[in-house]
Length: 213
Image 1 (tube, helix red, strand yellow):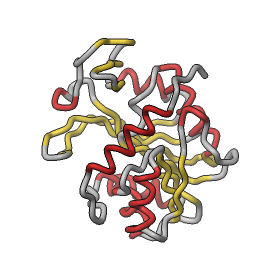
Image 2: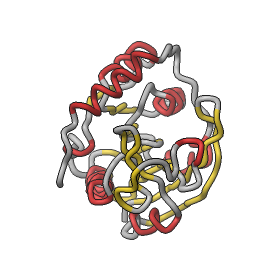
Image 3: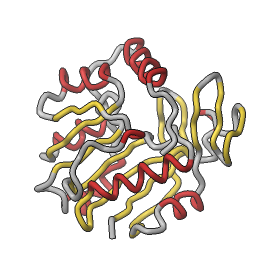
């Protein structure tokens, strides 16, 4: 996989989490809709991939799941270790490959964490998620929508279709066709466009539930 240097991105995210005054994570309830799929992984580890400061990690641990919270930023992981000590934490650069054995986890949650990459890299990351999942393991993910105008859709220099660079940062936006192409080899259980409130502004995103087949 062709890879850009990761150091500037790591520094950026550490600065982001240093600036934020974060208490205990606060989650929304988007995963409620997928509880039957999550329940299949009750006896397995669940990876929260690109966990940020731990909203989904907290949701899952409160419901008795064994969570491995993964992020590029050690500052984010330190926040999780402080507020959610029952979760395991692991520093992960997705572009380097996931540091987990084949077929070792029951589910992966990737909540707005798969939109920073060129298409080729995104495909490799999704394939690597499939590698670490058990057969019939599930990916639950949210993605930026092409209609997400409050968070940069269409803003900056377009490097690839729906993939932009603005002020030195790169971000991808998805439509339904992108997701169906990306997960053509999976069993798609649900794909829907929805809105949420993020940092005080409405955000438009896609939710996807896909099973490894």
